[in-house]
Length: 440
Ligand code: AMP
Ligand code: GLY
Image (spheres, rainbow, N blue to C red):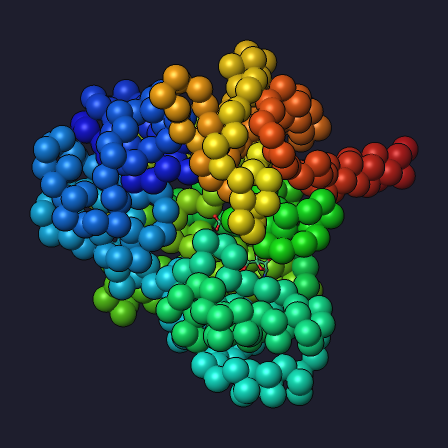
């Protein structure tokens, strides 16, 4: 079959890489793609927010399956347009995509379905929002209602930070109309995990668990980003916890959407805080996470097209993904200045060397080839380096070994990706050691 993948980030390079290994694919196209997807898919230079242009491309290339990477085309209703023409799409409808494109919609949906989440209030008035902040405790979370590339959330420790966030969103309109309304949320404490499932609207299958690193600086400090690194599996997701998440979050969300007439065929991503009173939803996304996808997809043993096609066809009942019994760690290499205004056009060195190491995979995100075939940065998150190992320590070592071989001017990356997981694994094995010692 012919497959079209939409997007141009690290997630899409990981998807293109995995889809290109499928036995079922005759031709893989990626629109618009990047310097990495160009090595495993044919790039198509179109605006993926232009629904007519995407449809025209599908007809021209006789596309059987469209896989949608980012949220923006979904939020504009690309799925509805393509499905109306009989094209199979892995990605939810416009109505269902509001689970991500409107945080207020998602909160109201969670309320109707009884899904545990942080307490919240909605504001469109700066004065009222500030009054509310004055009367409530800190820290507090301020969120733009609409899409903001992962940057529309501020966890404020002080009143000044909270006021500044309110002004940035409601007054300065930094996120445009996505910031016409804000949510002010209770700040949840705990360990954060990303749980992703593929759903056909009724059935769902789990993707491997993962954990993102949202903040820009080591030790989870500084402003939120799209994600600075990830690892898979996430050790805190035990089978018992997963069952609780299924029963209290995933099943109610999928059944709730269906019963309200919203077609959800695609990836449902629940960002969850494991609090002392159980798992609570931080956000829903309607697509693969980036950089979670990079860490998860290298661990997938099954043919991904079997899974994506079954999802798009509404028949996941007989498919179950298989995973390698290994660990993956993804470190994002960002351009100087990210997540603020960042530099572009820097020449990237060392990728070819890095990937000669076994267990090191490099996915491109914000990159392009210049006229002379040199790789240059174009985006805030330029590259993802993934290390794969039989344990977390080895995966961390491989990822940073790869990172150390790559260079561009003012390249920035976090040095502590997956170290919290390493600590948890070490604790677990210490505890097990103690237990078996006790028995002796
Ligand atoms: P979101 O885009 O809603 O997932 O928010 C981005 C990040 O902000 C999350 O991954 C969390 O780290 C943090 N966050 C969001 N909501 C909350 C909350 N209610 N309590 C604590 N942290 C939060
Ligand atoms: N890494 C978080 C996201 O993709 O939303």
